[in-house]
Image 1 (tube, rainbow, N blue to C red):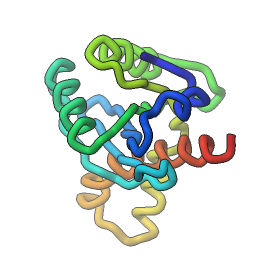
Image 2: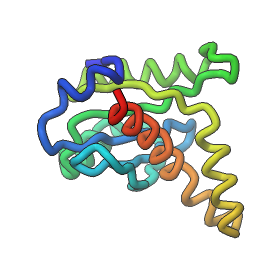
Image 3: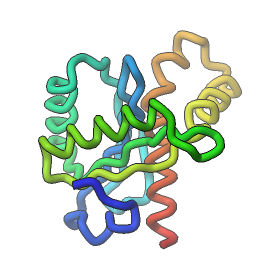
Image 4: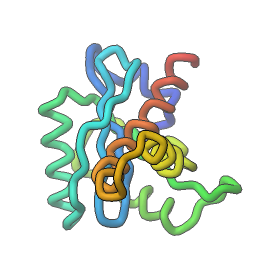
Length: 153
């Protein structure tokens, strides 16, 4: 079911985690929260294939890690409007919703990749290493934003 972020706390089973997703055209960055829903950590990056296989992989990881829901980064335009990438993300969520009872919510991901890339550059990571890390770190950045909001609301 696709829900608003404010409804997550009331739906998640106790001691479950949230899985954050940064949907790219070629990869999906993944992050996991702790069971206290306080800290997001980069988990991994998977190469996108067909939706059915991607969903199967995501749901298997969610089950293995005890995830009780998904937070998908919503790539809004800088003015807050929705473009084609938002439509693609919403369609991915709608398709995923048909394959799982886990709740799915969206979180504004504006500037997440830029912020993570800047951090990696400041940490003097090579371009190749940044490419390996950026998607899962962006997913962590997105998920952390949602967790911080949940904690304060």
